[in-house]
Image 1: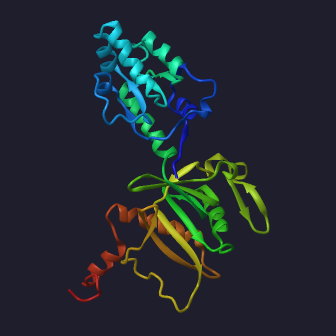
Image 2: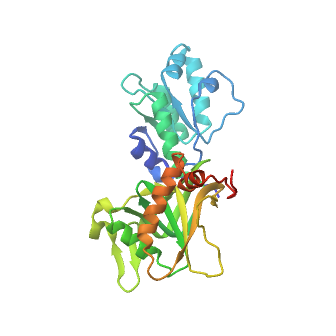
Image 3: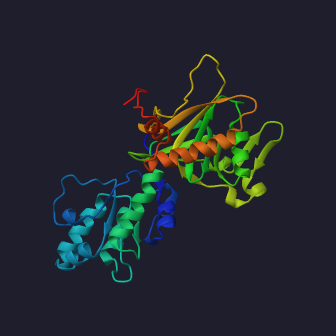
Length: 312
């Protein structure tokens, strides 16, 4: 599935100024997270040009065009706008003014012409950052996403197992809710999954017997967060006496989400277990592992055992 980002959102998020745009920017969609500097194209090399990319003209491109005779510059710019990219953006707006031909061809070919005060490198970085999130492959999972001690924990499990109740207890203990019931997971890089809530149910949580509450209104805006990177997946399941659960933490388990392996563990649920405290401990333990410390390995070293439990 191909995702798109409205150009209006980019203009708002990256703080750009419109020089000329069509009437409805919501209908102008950007489908590529790559941003291009059209120097080679303006020099006459047209192979491998991707018209789906945003085109940014910085100091190098504008000064290069200034060396052209008017007819040649006009032909080069018309060729660029005739490819109908999502938009042409001129950076360093305090120093650079779009050529009059740019405005003419923007109107002729109905290509948005924008400008930004940022340097070209900074502008491109900001655009790519926003587009990587907006155009990322995504999947929606039934679960709860919370931030605990800076770690994003995705809580999975059957309906009624206690995911929302655990989340609200964590919120009371000073942690933050990201999403309840439906978690939208986006692959923003080859190693990162970021979770958020659909906008229409953001900050709401359902508690059986109580109903639906707005966490931001009840506990304050400090109790919620719009998005969070997923660092750990915890699956809650009813206690099964026949199943062997993780006891030492030496074995590493992972959950595959959109091709990214996320550390995971299964926590059995039974009366008397304080799941909020267990998840807090799991978050701290996961943070320590990322920093290179494993308490189970230290214990084995103190006992003089190797990874398999044999004496060294």
